[in-house]
Every structure is written in C-alpha cells, then in structure tokens.
Image (cartoon, rainbow, N blue to C red; front, side, top):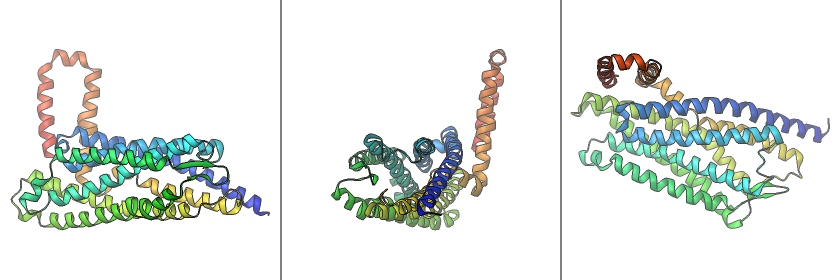
Amino acid sequence: MSSSSISDGILKFATQYSLYTGCIMFSFGVIGNALNILVFTQLKLFRTNRCAFYITIESISNFIYQFLSISLTVLTSIYGDDATGRSAIWCKLRFILAQICALTTFYMICFSAVDQFFSTNHRYNLRQMCTLKLGRYFTFIFICFAIIHSVLLGSSYDAQPTLGCVISDHIWVQYSAFFFYPVLTGFLPIAIASSFSILAYHNVRHIVRRQLPIVRRKLDQQMTAMVLMRVIVFVCFVSPYTAYRIYVTNFPTSRSMPMAYAIGRLIQAILTSVTMINFMINFYLFLIFSSRFRRQVKFVLVKKCWQQWKYCCCCINNRIEPENNIEAHNIQMESEENI
C-alpha cells in the first residue's frame, strides 16, 4: 500500500471522525447549554447570585460556540476540511469568533471561582466587596477586551495555498506562541481558576461555623462544589489542545507533505473533539454531581415550563378561574424557596 493511499485513508477517517463527533457534541451542547440558561435565569434563587450570572454568560458563549463548531463540521463533511484554507475572509472570521467564545468561556470560569472565594470568605468586608453590579461591569469590560483582542489577532490570519489558514505576520506568530496560547488561554486561566476554586472549597468547609441563613449557606455550598468540578474538567480538557496550538503555530504542516499533513489533521480532529467537551459538559457535570441542581432542573421543567405551557393551552379556563392562578403562583414561589 502506497503512502499516498495511506494518507488519503487517514484524511478520510479524520473527516468522518470530525463529522460524527461534531454532530454528537452539537446535540448535547445545544441542549445542555440551553437548559443551563433556562435554569439559571428562571429560578429566583439564582437571579441575584453572581456566580450564577457568570455561569449563565459562560453558557451563552458555549451556546454560540456550538453553532460555530457545527458550521465547521458541515464544511468538513462537504469539502473534506473546514474551508478556512480556501477563503481569507472565512479564515479570519472563524478564528475571531472562536477566540471570542473561548476567552469568554475560560475567564467566566475564572470569575466564578474568584467570586466563590470572596462569597465564602470569613471576612465580612471581602464578602461585601463583590456585588452583582460590579460583576456585570467587569464582565462587560472583559467581553469588550475579548472582542478587540480577537479582531486584532484574527486579522493576522491568512489563507495560504500550501499551509492553509495560518498567521502570516511573524510578530503575531511570536505573540501567539509565547503569550496567547501558553499564557492568556493556558497557564493564566488554569492557575486562577484552580487556585481560587481550591481556596473557595477550603472556605466552604468552615461555612457551618458562621452565622448565615440556611438558604445562603446551602447555595454557597452548592455553587462552590459545582465550580470546583467545572474547574477540574476545564483544566483536564483545555491543556492538551493548548499545547497542540502552541506547536502548530510554530511548526505548521504543509499540504505538500501528504503523510505529515494527514497525521496532523487526525491529531487536530481528536484534540478538537476533546476540547469541545469543555464547551458542552457543564450542565451534565452539574446534574451528575449536585443532587440539589437536579431538583432545581426538575422544578424549572415541571413546575415552571410545563405550567406555562398548560396555561397557554388552557388560557380560557384560566380566565374563568383567576383565583386558582394566584393560589398556584403563591404555592410555586414557596416551593422555589424550599428546593
């Protein structure tokens, strides 16, 4: 068997692998992130919680990333690659959108961990330092930074006939190799999220000793456990792809070397599917490790969404008996506080 046929076989396998894993990730990712957004916006308990706000922004970013990912999957199934090497505009746009979503997701995880550290700290002044208004302000500033940074860096990408979509400016190559991938999307968010989530977990172990309302205490314990598990998964699934991006930025593989190019495409497909887990797993992670979150999801789907659907379908009966709606609403608010 010739090396050409082997490389063609590897490319075909990489294409099929990207197609199937992409469709699976998209299905689970859209459902999971949509349910995350639904739960954290519908429950009154979460509406004034800063950590829930950061998780909601992360879920929105992940939700957008899922559609970018499925577009690349569709293009791969049609053309055999993601078509970024065919169009300079798509090459730039793809990396700009991907970097905005990735930076937003990574640093919302960091913001969640930092917030839980301050929220569970035994010092009252530190607990009062972070407010929801301040969190929204910092989130807005960071998203603006992510957009500006991604536009500047993404504009340096260009579609080349032999190398595909790569950074054409040597200065940006050095920046990506020595700061963007190893620091900004690598060591820095991993270090921040890991250290603050561990400190928050240490704080929450002593939270019983403090005089706090039982609802606040349970919420802090729940959010800290969820953030800690999220950080562990984040570190495990982001590190391999970050190392890969550092390597390919410094040593891009030319299409004129079929075997090396095919192997590179296969490695890229596998590591991309691994890092894609990071953008779809948060809802399922919370569902597995938090029994309280499972009850909250059930409450939102059954008591809120189902009741609203019944109300829309039976609006005539509801007009006839309005006092039943008021009573049901009061019962629902009491149940929400007790889950």
